[in-house]
Amino acid sequence: MKYLYDPPKVLKKMFPDFIWQTNNNKILFTFDDGPSIYSSEKILKVLNNNGVKALFFFVGENIDKNTGIAKEILTEGHLIGNHTFNHKVITFLSKQEIVGQIRLCQKIVEDKLNYRIKYFRPPKGRFNFVLSKVLNEENLTNIMWNLLTFDYKNDINIVKFGIDNYLYKNSIIVLHDSKKSANIIVDSINYVLDKAGKMNFEIGNPEECLK
Image 1 (cartoon, rainbow, N blue to C red):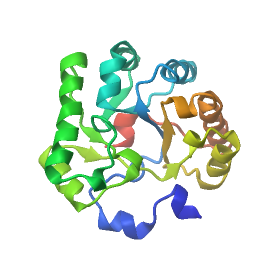
Image 2 (image 1 turned 90 degrees about the vertical axis):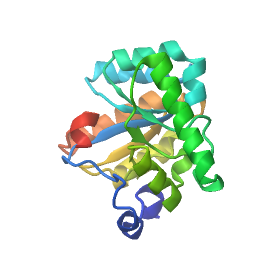
Image 3 (image 1 turned 180 degrees about the vertical axis):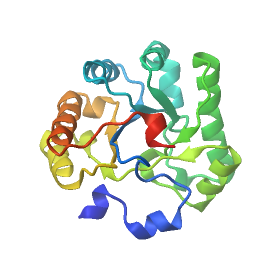
Image 4 (image 1 turned 90 degrees about the horizontal axis):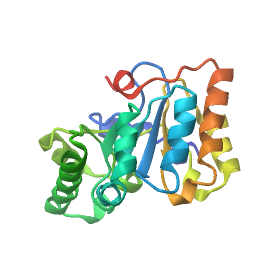
């Protein structure tokens, strides 16, 4: 059961260049799949109300559709990561296709947001040694996690179970900036904050958590 939320140690040892937890014993919020007209504004509001900064892993084609929201996320002081151009599963792609997915997303971010990304996360968390090599060549760092919330299932009770059982002081938490999680995303964030407060865990900002 645990490996569904927190990847197994053997996998982490096989890919030591990937970041699986924070480096400062503080919790880091990350959001995949945005920017989204359904959830980004909700996320920004609750983060701002609580003084929290996060790392958003953007899909290139979503930036193209929602450039204004993407700019707002940057203006609010959050960081952006690369989540490929159109969310294709890396393990189904050739090396050339992986490079293309990454570079297309990078180019859109640079052209539309004047921003240089240095962090990456693979769609659906699927990766292989080819991706590891590509990321080294592209000078990107792969940010994984040690708490997947399953918020995309749109069930707050599932989210609460994961947080209650697998929230650590060094957690990198995966939530989603998408239509699938939009109905529960505010409650999910607030539940993490409430649980962390009760456990005396601190919330960190992306730069300090990933040093």
